[in-house]
Amino acid sequence: MFSGALSAIVTPFRDGAIDEAALRELIEWQIQSGIDGIVACGSTGESATMSHAEHERVIKLTVDAARKRIPILAGTGSNSTAEALRLTSFAREVGADGALMISPYYNKPTQEGIYKHFKTIATTVDLPIIVYNIPSRTGSNILPETFARMCDVKNIVCIKEASGSIDQISDIRRLCGDRLTILAGDDSFTLPDMALGGKGVISVISNVMPRETHELVAAALAGDFARARDIHFRLLPLMRALFIETNPIPVKMALALMGKCSPEMRMPLLQLTGGATEKLRSVMKELRLI
Image 1: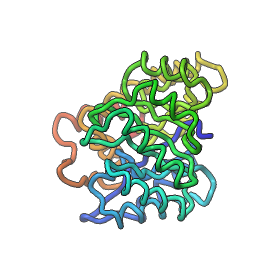
Image 2: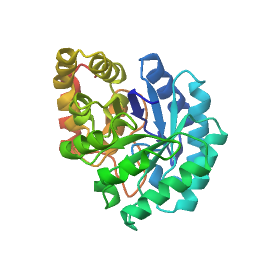
Image 3: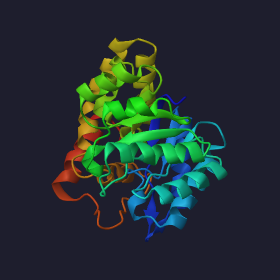
Image 4: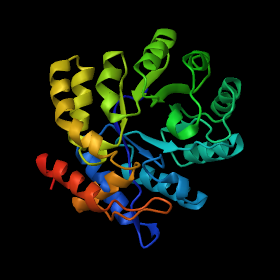
């Protein structure tokens, strides 16, 4: 259902508040640059430090600004099943095309608990769900065998896989086939993932280079892996630079250097400074982004 290059879009802040004008401009630029979809209120969108009211406002604003031109996914995950259910219901009400749901973090449920968490929401709210697996942030890994069980659950249609393991991606494909779409959760894994049958990426680098990220994925989907490799190698230094510190600190600074939004972060995350900023600036100059 979902494929291509989807931007996990940042949430611009100014003086402590959401900069709605900057967010609208970013969304429009993304669409005009050919991006295939946008994820609002993901990790890159700093959802962890937004209030519920702000979270809902960003989802609605993104849906409204897109005007059905591209799919909009709403980050609705939580380590509370009841809270995730409420957020997912809201996303459906305001017209989101799907929900990106992180696996419950901190409380580290069992595989059975993870399965029942997603099944409860998927069978209660009639909205396509993308299951987001990122063990480095959640403290637990969704096993391929658990994904295989999810294949038969209505509304669970896709995986954002960010375990960092090619073996895990291979096992998910082996067990699930085409019953669940796999999207890469790390930019540098986009091409390897697609070589195994993945359909695209939920991307950080596309915040800065939306057209090129779309072109990489489009080439791979068309079977032109030579062109996809060329783009991958060109973008690889920036893919790495955007994780020189915790995401989304570097990508916010990159957008600020481009004049797209303020680099303002919400504590406990702080703005990129000093040598890290200069390293990022150098890579961006090489790519002629600034």
